[in-house]
Length: 114
Length: 114
Image (cartoon, rainbow over all chains, first blue to last red):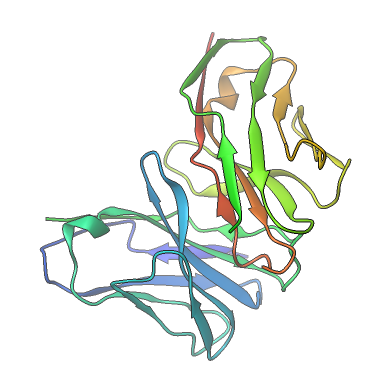
């Protein structure tokens, strides 16, 4: 199994551009999440999904959209990039709605918005 | 809402020194508690977890005990190695929030010198 994969690894955008960060998992996990990691802030939840067709907002959803058309994929869309979205983005998945289950993380996408 | 407060670093130790990283939490009910580790340039991976009060999680020589009376989950290791150099995150998933919604502390960077 490849686990959780993310593409691209690095990306530079100009202010106002849009892009999609890809995330896929091959573990048949029902639950998937997107976090951003900023220095001194830890990880903060952007959006999450508990199954295909079901998404919800996390702590910092503004400026981001998500969709979940399949169990495997959970893309994150930046509609109009802003310098404040410069961050490292992590996708994670977990098996089911059990608070004791660990989340499996992808390797991250480092995004810079100029 | 739920929150996690952990000792901020950076922490610098010599090889074979004793490590403690403090973590306290605020949550309703009985959350599950986790320690994740992030090695340079990588995503997060689960180090250990505890799902109920007085449980002790352990892995790779690291230990943490779920203390409900003090709302704490301190990470300890008796003898650190250079290979333990990483960023450590304390996290919780709430009783009502599932594994798709972790709340993280800000992270503690550990550097172990030979």
